[in-house]
Amino acid sequence: NAGVTQTPKFQVLKTGQSMTLQCAQDMNHEYMSWYRQDPGMGLRLIHYSVGAGITDQGEVPNGYNVSRSTTEDFPLRLLSAAPSQTSVYFCASSWSNSNQPQHFGDGTRLSIL
Amino acid sequence: AQKVTQAQTEISVVEKEDVTLDCVYETRDTTYYLFWYKQPPSGELVFLIRRNSFDEQNEISGRYSWNFQKSTSSFNFTITASQVVDSAVYFCALSEGSRKLSFGAGTTVTVRA
Image 1 (cartoon, rainbow over the protein chains, first blue to last red):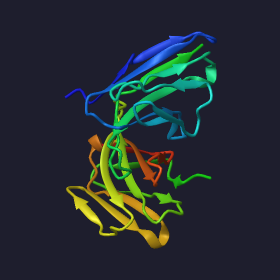
Image 2 (tube, one colour; image 1 turned 120 degrees about the vertical axis):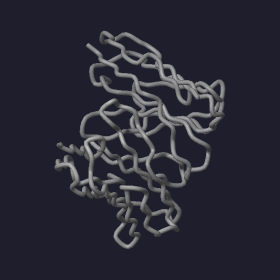
Image 3 (cartoon, each protein chain N blue to C red; image 1 turned 180 degrees about the vertical axis):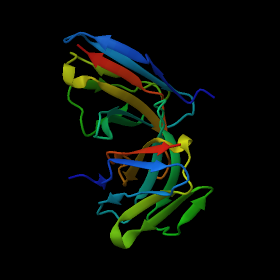
């Protein structure tokens, strides 16, 4: 069972570069989301999607874009990387009900120089 | 305002001691869900338990137990007879009607042999 797959696992960028973090799930989950994890701050929601073609902002959306063209994929785009975006990024998916636990990918460790 | 507060930043115990992790949440919804996740040193996020706002029955699962009290807005987690493998960061999270998950800052548990 693949579950939630994130690529790449590690990435180093220079300030101003753009890149896309990939997230794919094979559980046919409607709900997908992106979080960033910073020391002492837990996980903070960046963007989320309740289904294909529908996305919305979370707590810290600035500097990031998302799209959801299929149920399976939910890529996160950094438009112009900044050192403040150095973080560990987690993608998650779940069934649409809010009582369902989210399944997380293994994370992408991103460093912006 | 922080919706989920984990006041303990770090806890260090000797193996076989009990560990209780505190979680206090804030919500105006009458229907909500609470979760505990574990993040071992390898970095993945592992779902441990879910509780809904209508179920205050406490639960024991092996060495883990949970104490949910609506009157004090608390959802505490206890590890009995801790083991080195319990060393991890533990996150409490709240899901309200919007399905967005709000995480606490996490408590780092270190179990020494």
